[in-house]
Picture 1 (cartoon, helix red, strand yellow):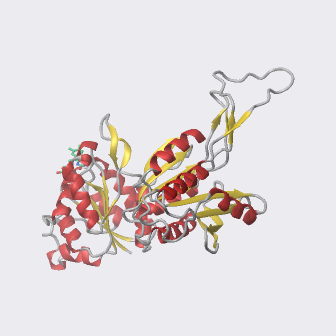
Picture 2: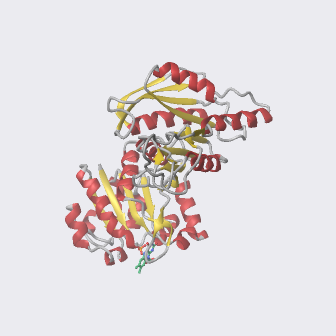
Picture 3: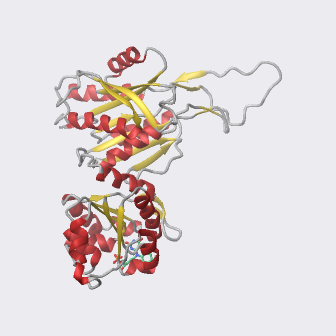
Length: 415
Ligand SMILES: Cc1cc2nc3c(=O)[nH]c(=O)nc-3n(C[C@H](O)[C@H](O)[C@H](O)COP(=O)(O)O)c2cc1C
């Protein structure tokens, strides 16, 4: 595909070199269009050498090819990374003073902006309004990550990991539907750790890959995503708000808080059913003789709690408690759609059906653990059980495929 990579004058411009490599190495034809000031951060020879194409910033070079029109018209995707506050403002107002802004005006393909700037600039009402304008017109503006900025500051404004920006672009080019636009979704990912003492915990093998794939695909489908991540060591998905937790109790708190105004909650995290009754203040010592028994207590059932809260709210609103297509709209008792995950080793479908009925969720993704599936692998295969509908089989494939099936079913219920 033909990609225009716009680079504006943010300190993160050097990260666009990696983004460029990701595009070229996966076979895309990339024309880099920096702004004049961006060349102060990374010079023209770097872009020309890495892209294999000449690089210019203004509309007066190679005029016989009319580049100010041609590049945008011919592109299959335009991505601006980093996008400065200045470029966002120019794009929102239709200014056309250089090659990047003329390209943005002539492009009819999907346009992705990956802003990066200091928090104050990102949160300024002018930038907020410009971003809203661009989104209204159909551009995809990826929320910046939270983290270390130039100098000692930290906060929202950091350019997401280039690999994550690439992932979004890849899914946009693949024509993923934008059916979650304007929707708020919460995804939990990873596996909880229940502390025994300051150094030990009871945990599980969940890597967070499936939850992260869900978050990434939801961003690509246009959703505002809060990702509650329990002990995951993966790069933050671009555009998602990441809340880090450790234990089941912390995860519960974060999920309930984030889901108070959410349209959908997907509980992909592996949450411990039990936790040690006592968390020792100091390390448990090896003693002679018998090992010390560990007393466990039950953790709250977050999925059942979400279902119960919704049932109560719907009852209060005078709507039936059985969720189904269309039942969610206009009820005013979010989360509208609740999705659970069940990893089973035996009687996979029977256990899944029982769990779906017990928890009162809309969808239950049931996967068999083992045989290179589920935990820690990039692939998954599952059956999605649907309340009031037929199960959907998802054959073995990338976790993004399963995520897309889930979001397709969720989007259908949000109509
Ligand atoms: C060291 C340095 C770092 C900067 N980083 C950013 C940034 O991350 N985001 C931003 O919006 N502007 C940043 N600026 C300000 C822009 O470079 C400035 O607004 C410039 O005129 C933008 O030009 P452009 O949008 O045409 O590329 C930075 C400036 C300097 C000197």
